[in-house]
Image: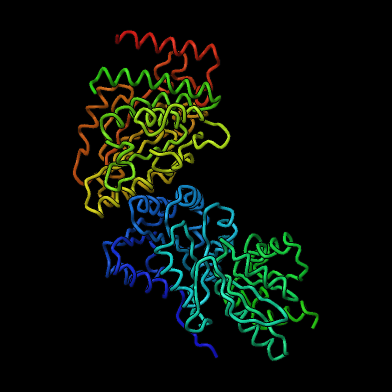
Length: 313
Length: 275
């Protein structure tokens, strides 16, 4: 049984603090979000490396861009819901179009805020940012991916968005796994079905594969931690050699991982069944992150059941 | 460069702005003419930004937040040697980097602008980076008066004030007009000075089309230690060409052949008076 680790958000803040202690050019910008971003220790230990702009997300992105123009390694940290909707034009113009090396950190992403409701959910961030040229989008799954994403972001010469959730995550990857922004991780290989998951839904896909194994169904599991640039090569290779593809994401079914996969399958003339799991286009049900994901067919049991249906088993 | 030479520059710049807009068939004529004297003084007397030091980190910076007046910026950067006039004549051509708003694809341009209300936050970030590095470099940003309706401008002001950015100089091109009509009729923004004062800025008002007044104002900054400065530069939209001045329809009107000829004649007459 895999060990349950820490919330990815905690891994983010610990990794960033450790890196920032070694590099005084690392500057964090917050919008009254240091508590939610687990950055209180950062603020206490490195007060000269944190800029607080108050509840002003548009300004947070613009100021981050300016700091990057001044040679700083900048992390703009704000709830993913506000950062990628309210500040979308600043992300588009001041970060992506102006080509500034800013890492935007969307905290409590997806439906991490659960019962706080749709104002606080970011089930649009993949879709909006995918349509913005020159943006990289990363959704780490477990603690390993969470820390690697931050370590690599420091030298990543490109506008970047990373989203983090706040619930403890199961360790998926064994020691020695290689993480590279833009390159997916093949968690396991199986000849029947490929489940492609991103971010915090990976552990659900992984648990589903364990259930399927009991029925003698063998899955491949791909951690598609980078939504853009998309690892087409790995995805196409598995699409060509699988009986079915199932995608799982904590995001709207529109414009995210699933539709990206669908587009690739269609445009490469691959004859494979595809099912997209995500949040449907409806007035969302209220509940905790776990309950809402379960409700929308993303419990391990339901993922396993849908996988069987796809395979007609 | 003395006062007369700067005044001559302003007339030549006006001719160049009209020329590139006329030839390319598009541009923001009114706003470029209103801010050209400010850019003239900045680039020839204040900023010390040139093609040689542009890629250096420790220098002054200029963010052209009212990005639509890019023809004024192109004209001055061209004169400073950032690119040739031949390059600039590719304005609005297919596959040219010289487009209707500034982009960093062109040497001399600090930041991609065009959507209003963005430049000041970026200037604040740059000014913060100078403070963090304990450098004395300054950051200047030019905003339009209509742009002040954007809420993000005021978000940026709170941060400028909080971090006591006396290395930040905001200039408002107060030409009283925006695309729909008079700013005070579209969405009143006065009292601009009191608003900026309330946000923690030192405020100076000047005639933004008067070279000697501009020179004096830039000598005074920063007025107070620990406070950002705003210069409210009262200008005339379309300044320098009688039939373009204060005309709403010249926001982005392109001169006809006849209008171009008349405008150049007017400016040549003024230039002749210096010879």
